[in-house]
Amino acid sequence: MTVQAYVLVQTEVGTSAGVRAAIAALSGVTSAEDVTGPYDIIVRAEAPGMDELGRDILSAIQQVPGITRTLTCPVVRL
Image (cartoon, rainbow, N blue to C red; front, side, top):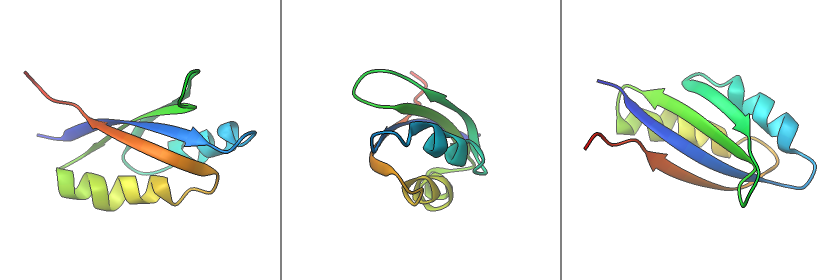
């Protein structure tokens, strides 16, 4: 069973399109969309487990230049 999460991303002014393209190219990212509101991009990602999600995907997202803040929301099944 894979772990899925939404990652909300804030960017520096004027960098959203480039940041979104860089994130969309990362392994484990299934979608990256521009949005309006307090966050600029919403990302959907999946990994085999929480450790891989954090180590492989979230750390790669946070290293993309132009990002000022992220918020990760793991998907849960109730």
